[in-house]
Image 1 (cartoon, rainbow, N blue to C red):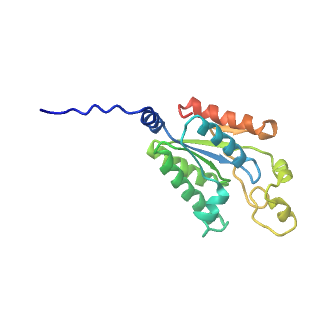
Image 2 (image 1 turned 135 degrees about the vertical axis):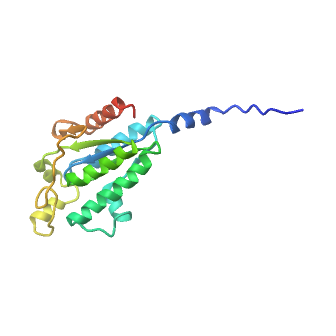
Image 3 (image 1 turned 45 degrees about the horizontal axis):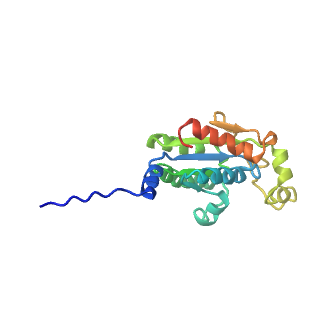
Length: 198
């Protein structure tokens, strides 16, 4: 006599399975220092998590402390920083996580390489240019970088005495001087929804 175990998954298991099948993506928010990249990413992360999405936020400052503490701010080191962050983001995204990456990434070639690696994996990459004008970034000066640069205490500040190469064809450009944080986050959310991610 054989016994068949008919085990029905409970609601929590079903919910997890549905969530687990959701596609991931890397959302790369690039822009000048104090453009609002991290603030927008945090607002978007809160909304996505509230809807049950698995989300990771790879903050540039935290990564500089833990993942890329050995790097400086030469062009080579900045490119290496972007490649390491892009690699981690891609690993997470291809496993169904929405990865928000508010990192300056000033050079177009480095961003293009990260995109091409995502494309090779078939992993969605959404570039968002947080296009806050330099004057407004300097006015906000969240970390005091612009003040230090003006005082001669800092050199190599992106957008001032080190180049920032503006994305020519991002999936989304946010003119944040005309948008609130919530409006900006909503536009990124809509871009993800249009791609079947959110």
